Amino acid sequence: MLVDFNTLPDESRVWIYQASRSFSDAELQEVERSLSEFIDEWTAHGSELEAGFEIRYKRFIILALDQSKTLASGCSIDASVHFIQGLEKKYDLELLDKMNVSYKQGDFIAYKPLADFKKMARQKAVSKNTVVFNNLVTNKLEYLENWEVPASESWHARFM
Image (cartoon, rainbow, N blue to C red; front, side):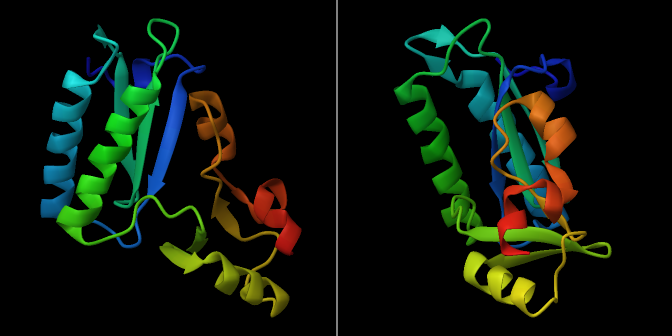
């Protein structure tokens, strides 16, 4: 069952998918419609899942699930991954590759392979103050407080 992302409790589980490029405005409308339809039908062992989403910066899909009502099952997680894979194919982009890093360069969101980000850190092209996106957060509260942070406050700090 689709619910407003903002009404989900802070303990809701989150999955963050970063796109290798920004969605166009037309793509964004299609993706939002597809996400709404998917979540409306999303279940775990026949039980309705209460979930919501938001899309940030035209490139991050944040899916949140209130597990206090129904826990995600292996099958329901597989279904969400299959859905995301479908978006990757349809829009010719990457959403599941966790070996890439997104960070801010002014108002622009940069997307680099982890190896390139490490090299940039060694060359001082990015610093501990560079705002990065910590896509490893696991619940809505962590997402709200620790997702968009200086590299020094994230797992990225090990490269600085």
